[in-house]
Image 1 (cartoon, rainbow, N blue to C red):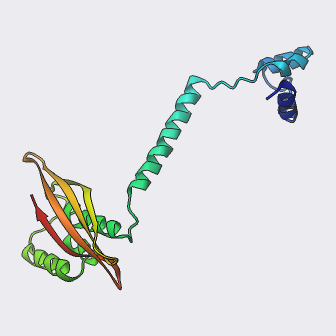
Image 2: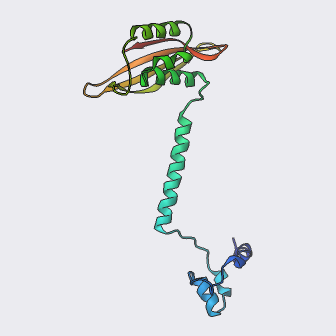
Image 3: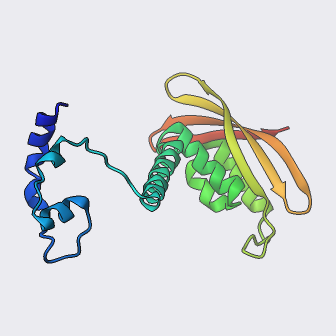
Length: 190
C-alpha cells in the first residue's frame, strides 16, 4: 500500500483522537498536536501496531481457549447418529455405571441383556460412596452393514484405584429403527 493510500485510509480516523488538553498526553501524536508542531510528516511514517507483552499474552490465551473449545466440540459425535448413540450408551453403561440410563439406547437382544444385568445387580447400590473405575474408550473400527446397520469396535481402558489398569474391547451392533439408532447387541472381550 503506498503512503498516499495509507494516508487516505487513515485520514478518516484523524478526527477520532481526543484533544490532549482534556487528558494526559499518551502518544507521540498527542504531544505533537499539543505543542502545535506540524504533524504532516507523521503520515509518511510506516504504521506499526505493537501490543504490550500483557496484551499479547491475553490475546494468545484467548485464542488458545477458543481453539480448544472448538476442538472439543468437534470431537463429539452427533447425538442422533449411530456413533453418537453408541457413545451415549458407553457413557451410561460403562463410564457412569448407570444401567437404567443405558436402557433408552438399546433394543432387541441388547435390551434383554441389559435387563438381565439390572436384575442380577438388583440390591447393589452404586452411589457416590462406591469406588468406581475410571473408564476411557476410543473407537477402533467402524463397519457399515447395509443402510440400517453398523458395528463399532471400541477399545476401553479401565483403571481401578489401587488395582491397576486393563483393557477390554467392546463390540456394538447398531440398528436404525422407528425410534432412530439403537444398540441391538453388545459384547465384551479381551
